[in-house]
Each structure stands twice: as C-alpha cells, then as structure tokens.
Amino acid sequence: MAISTHANQVPEQVQALQKEFDEFIYMASHDLKEPARKIVTFGDRLTSSLGEKLSENEKEYFTRMMDAARRQQSMIDDLLKLSRIKTTDFKKEKINLKELVADLVVSPQTDFKFDVPEIVYADKRQLAYALQELIRNAEKFSGEKPVLKLKSKSIFSTVIGQKGLNSSRSYAYIILTDNGVGIPPENLEDVFRPFFRIHGRGEFSGSGMGLAIVKAIIDKIGGAIWAEQSSKGASFHVLLPST
Image (cartoon, rainbow, N blue to C red; front, top):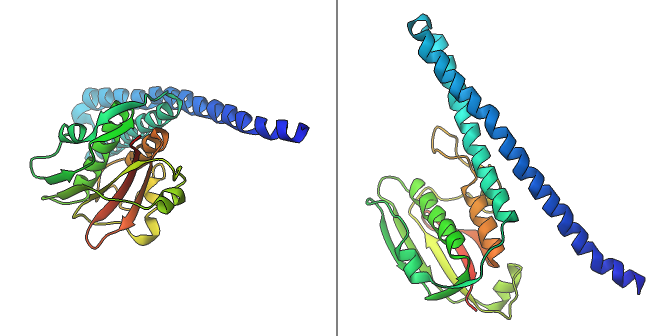
C-alpha cells in the first residue's frame, strides 16, 4: 500500500517541480529584458550625441551592438511567451474552426485555400495564435508567391495513439502545406525545439521560437503537431480535440 501511495505522489511532485521551473524561467526572462533595453537605449543616445565624431568603423560597431541587443530582446520576449503558455490556464470552449481560419491574417501575395472541420474544442485565443503563427512561418519560407493549403483528412486511431493522445477520443486532423524551401528529413523534430534554426539569420529573419510556441499551445490544448516530408515545401500536421 505504501508503494502505491508513493507512486501516486510522484506525478504531483514532478508537476510541482515543473511549475517551479516554469515560474523561474518567466522571472528570469522578465529580468533579462531590462539590461537589453538599456543597451539599445543608451546605444541610440551615444550614436546620436557623438554624431560625426564616430568613424565609419565605430558606427558599424554601434549598429552591430544594438542589432544584437534587439535580437536578444526578441528572444527574451519569445521565451516569455513560451513560459506564459505553460503557466496559464487554457479555456476549453466550442470553436467554429472554419470561422476562426477565415479570420486569420494572410498576405495579399499568398494564395491560401482551406477546407477544415467545423467544430473543435480549445482555447480560442491561443488556437488562433498558433494557427496564425503556422501561416506566418509558411509564408516566410515560401518566397514571393506563397501557395498554402490547409485541408482536413481522416486519421486512424492507431496513429492518434502513436502521437501520445487518447485513441478513444475524436480529433480533427488538419494539414498545412506550402511551396517553400521545405525541411530536411533529419530536422523534422528539431524545428519544434526552442531557438532552433535551419537557416542563418542572413537568409530568414526570426528567433527560432515560433514553432516551439505553436507546439506548446497545441500540446496544452490536448492535441498534437508534427512535420512530415513533402514533395515540395513543408507539411505540418495538427490534431485538435473535436469532442
């Protein structure tokens, strides 16, 4: 009996430690914002006050310093978003997925077509953020004329179980495909890691946190997300609770 009691207590202890760690990450990220902000602020003031006294090399040093500080600010902001997701309670509400997708912002240059299930259950604001981020990510890596398709598909219960979900529940299965640069097979799981980048900053902007935030949201909703190889571009697969 004592063994059973201890076994039941372990998950609670792990959850408490995880909560404590998430709160630490949030506080640390919040405190790190101030030094980065001051670097940018005083760098701007020095550049302005010194003006023509700076040599071309010195101006470049200031520019590179402030660009690095701004990148740090962006990374810290994204880390804060990730920590908030883990420490925020999500609502479970009935959502008209077709209406939600229709309200997402898409670039005028993007050819976007969608056919999705009508009803899912999730936190509406968080799901909208996750799907919007997926679309932004697809547009960024798809050149001047992105072609995006978000479609629904049936799925076997065995696959649902393989993704760590309850195979007896019902899920909406949607797939977002694009005509972009694609994902190397060896990086299909890596793309969801915080700060992971396949391409250098000179090729594509961003902190490498977008898909990590998307995954954190989908996981907390009670769904799953993964990437697969596609004949052209990238293919992101999402399971969302539909009951």
